[in-house]
Image 1 (tube, rainbow, N blue to C red):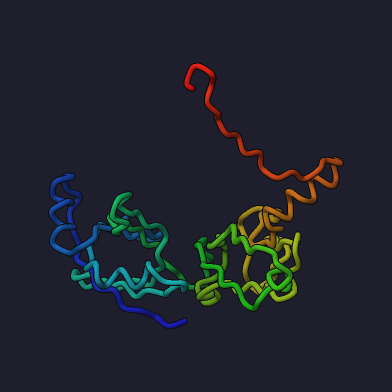
Image 2 (tube, rainbow, N blue to C red; image 1 turned 180 degrees about the vertical axis):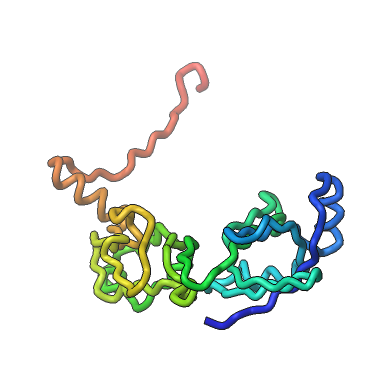
Length: 212
């Protein structure tokens, strides 16, 4: 995985109005966390952070602070404005050689499912997976091959197997599935219950004697 340089400025914990002014100037406040370092309040340029957040890949970051410190890290959490979807705050977690880290990694679906060709509908329930691994084993994304997935079938986390990676979510959690179309489900339900499929009833209102 390529390492991306992110330049930051050390900042003081400040008031809400000061943070608003900081964001209006084109910068985003954040915090760097590490087991071996006190939490460090920083801010970075919005245009530098956006490509690391709005992406389908996980990036290894070399954080360069204006104080002279440099840290290897990854993005741990991001907060967005509920109206504009702009980044309003972010957290970075430091990486240490030989120490495992817990992070979320994007899911990338590979192939065209058989079930889609059969008329099924693709539903991706999880777009990111939480994993534990060493820094050198962090993948850019988790590839999930859906080529052989048929209608009514699902792929669960427990079915995924990647070397040196531990998945932290429930093994029963569904990553992706191929569901039957709604109309097909309704027909099947009617057949199973012995009900007859009927055309929708059209109700018209005629004139009453008084109206005439």
